[in-house]
Image (cartoon, rainbow, N blue to C red):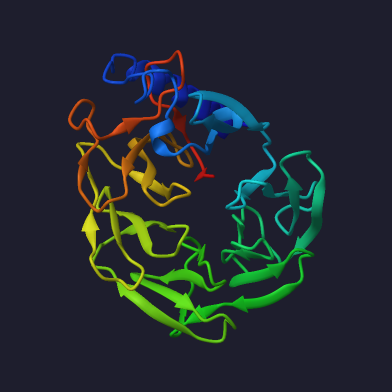
Length: 318
């Protein structure tokens, strides 16, 4: 409860401190919508409002999932039709979670199971492109797990090259292989999950937020306070954002032509962070995210507002 109160107070400060930013329009088509971006919906966490959905065609925001203090992680299928949630199982401390796969159109439950893996709290599952498998990043007790939709463990990858797999940076590829990291190395499994290879070893002191384009051709990640992009084979590494602030959490649009990401990143407490959502072309060029510095940067402002949407958790574009 104390953490939630601190987050809400920090969010209030964030809004007040940014209230003088006037370098934001209602949308690139001047009608409140963002149709030049190709449509779709951007989902994102915000404070106690739950998971919100930004409708790009209308420039409006609605609640996709109500706030839930028991929710640990979530994902939405690439076609935007299914919602996966991992949540605490009441009364079981940190030992068990409930995974639920839901049809977004009518709320019907496709699959629901209990995940028993020991100290599993706060896992962030990822749906495969064909929605037949679930990747669960490593926890305190387990490695990188691949589950079927009934919760059966198909694979449990604890280490690679003698090093434990990192808890973040897990992504599905279109061919049902997995990307993961160990330290500065970005790695990829084979389809049988019996072998893996190193795609790229990065030369950054710290990095993260790895994600892959829907067609599997590009990778983006955050490092050195900014966003970087490269080909899936590790070639053509380029910096794609710059600013006087810090950028985080890049995600590709469904057609792979754009990136939504966080800017003006701020720490709000021991466990909290806040940022603003903006969009830039995913064309390998560098864009300055400081307000008013680059007309190609699109600030994700909902209709009737002047500031970009704030976020403090997961983001995806469907």
